[in-house]
Length: 174
Image (cartoon, rainbow, N blue to C red; front, side, top):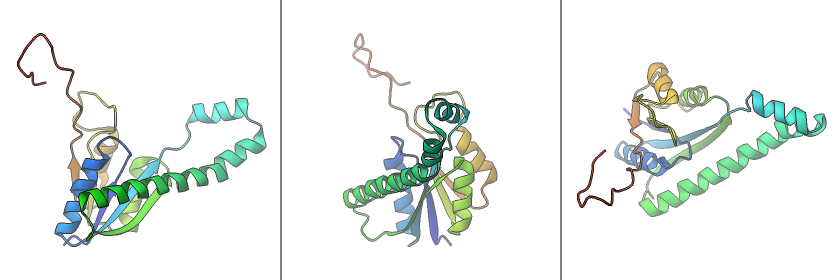
């Protein structure tokens, strides 16, 4: 039985599509929908730039209170997106649970959120924005597939079609 659906949202162009799938599943099972978004930690380059151009006191502020402010801003934006989608998508009866925004590596944040909210199903995209590779899965999706302890529902990322060839009158499939 599915009581809680966890949606891993990444603010990509496919977020709307992911929300549609997650909302429909949650409605179908009369389940609560919990949304999680991970903010990647600063990498070595980010830390090096801070230390090179910003004084130590400001660096501490940016990496502590600044990060907390960013998490709150991202959470606010995510709630706005979800609210707009609910109104436009007519998901008024949906039980929207918690919106979780945490800093950390996406796989770890998503799997920890699944445990925290006792998710019965994780919904996520197969790729992040801009990934054009020969692989069937993005690295985050691949790791979730291999490490999730609950069933998963993966939505393929549909890349925009290539530009139309004006020399032919026929539609070309890619």
